[in-house]
Length: 58
Image (cartoon, rainbow, N blue to C red; front, side, top):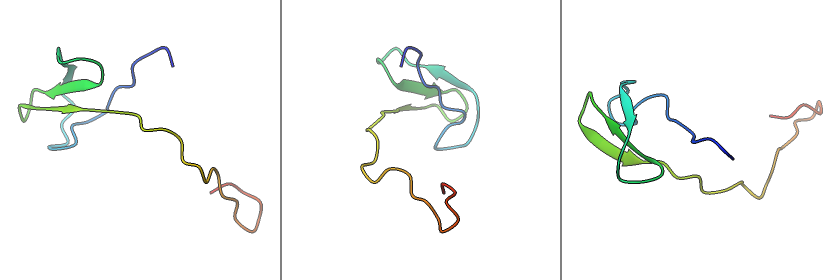
């Protein structure tokens, strides 16, 4: 992945006024509620995509 994934809203207050933090990769600051948080990709789930009876992925 070459670009940084950005959150759409603050997980605490729901506002969209977010800025990357100087604390490092994945750190964000919310100007609305004055909180800082970090996002981290953990990995893919081992179970993969499940198919319903009709063959469609759910």
